[in-house]
Length: 456
Image (tube, rainbow, N blue to C red; front, side, top):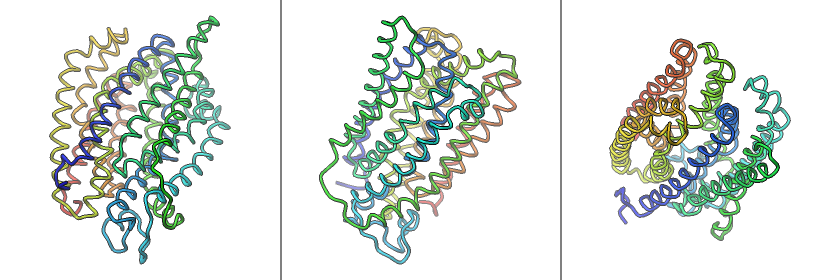
């Protein structure tokens, strides 16, 4: 099989598999959000969405960067017979290889090391989030009703950490079946459990509580783990686990710090939006409703087609890392060209669809005209959003995690600026245009960095 061809079997079949299962998962999640919006209302949806920045923050600390490191090292170990991180090699230096030593670890060894790191961090996050949920809800989110939801979300952290490590291991081996279907299992289990809680609440003539909706996330993550475990290939960890832990730590520490800072900024951005809407003239209830409509209805609709670019991005990271290990610059350039072409083509097509049908989607699917207005405006970001996601994955595969961090911070800085100065003047539309400008900057910056000769 020709490595230079982007139509290589693992990449194409893996992308198709991730796309199909991701699409099914998004469809289920899409109808689930419609169900939630009609069951709990826009204001409750806003409260529910306010907790997600905290959830994402815990993921970035406990598993996101570690999953990326596992994927990269497992991919390198697979092509070098377990000899990952050769001293003096370019890829080894970028991945945090121990200087002056040749470290022999197989993929199972990196999985074990990643699980140790991830679970150690997740236990700390679980205890902290559960114990200080009231303080976080009142002082940071400025909404006391978020506290019970945060206590439930605390239990998702260790499950999410294990799931992320398993996914990184499978992606590094280019075995996408388990992680692809695990996201589908997770979504089905989550929706089924919430529906069951809803039916029980209806029988008791009670409205379903937001805490029960959050418990659905816990059930989904647990189900995904059991599914992944059944597909783990047999084998033993070979090599120094301490060395594997140290390699993963060296790569994931700056990446995790970067993502933590980015997610902290995203959390600040999310928390500030309702407050700035109140400055524009909305009441507290109206500001939460607008925030819920934007983040719980309009944004998921616009992000729906990104299932394809997300699938490509996940598989491009280990593929690019492998190409860099082999110093195959042409493969990387071909990947960039084709990624740009298809992402822009997909983005323009989605923009056209949202401009034409956005208002109809809001009225028909969500029963909300404001959601339709948001979808039409957000439709313009599609080409930049899809392109940015894919190019950032390529940068991470090349080991340029600092570059992606700086681009993310720059984009967030633009958005926060529009939150502070655009929303009080133009309302939520000021923030929507901030999203458009920031995505354009991030996509253009990533493309410029990748095309530099010293990067590729």
